[in-house]
Length: 129
Image 1: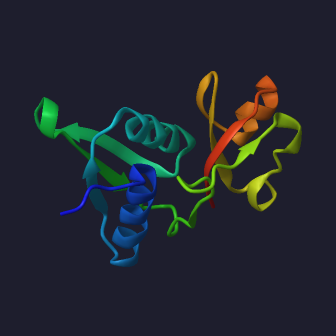
Image 2 (image 1 turned 90 degrees about the vertical axis):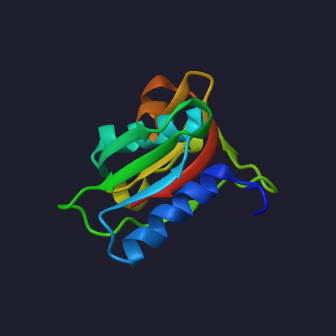
Image 3 (image 1 turned 45 degrees about the horizontal axis):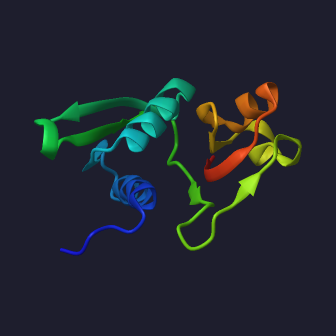
């Protein structure tokens, strides 16, 4: 099996594919940024739970989807071949405020709403609606 060039894109694709197959959860390999992204999605209410399973070098993340939420529409914005950065002034609400954009900033991972409040820009990882 070949290594993954875009681990965040792989995670988002696994979530999309599992929801298309009407699964209640999915698994992905563990990394710090993936865990931080999933924790942010849990805090925002887009997923119901995220757990880390396994021992240190072979840990996996298990994502449980929220039953009350419809299927997530996830779009990867910044890719390894084309990074997309945005200052705080240029961040626009996703789907008139019903969705979120996830950014990596100097203050960590945050939503577009938090980034506008703290007046920080960063790399736009993905949008979720």
